[in-house]
Image (cartoon, rainbow, N blue to C red; front, side):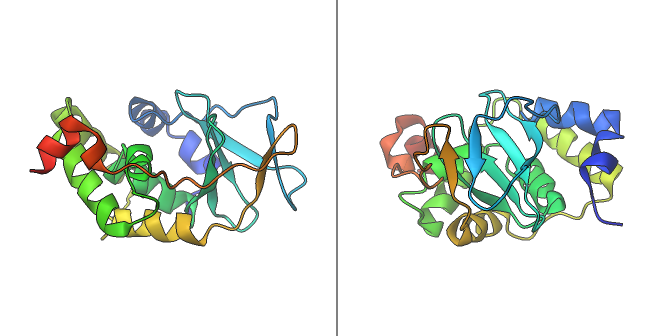
Length: 184
């Protein structure tokens, strides 16, 4: 049975654990963006910054940041949950992607994993979510994220009609002393 928002939100323990990884399944009621070709986007959740997660008719998960960036981040809701569980700092992987370079994204993921403050709690949440949803570990969540964002063709617009930009940012971990040192 495929993972759906209804199946997911019916499990309050998983919803609480995902909230600890900065994913809330309380959708935005007020639309603050549009998606070309999609009349009524299905908001399935948000994060602490006010950004939105949208389940597209294709079943891809679209991330719309409150900072004017947007793109598909996973091929399905299950792949999205696997990404969040494996790499809860996935937004930072994109931030430090050096414009969408997979090797840089891998470096960022390794450095970010090494700097987790609450590693034991995150690892416990990972195990609990995977067990509750019967999710396998994903082989390469960074490559899956890269591929989803690189192939994203959704055009998201602000209410004034201006298009959002790609989720790939220009920074690398070399721009951040803490991450640069963690990677050394």
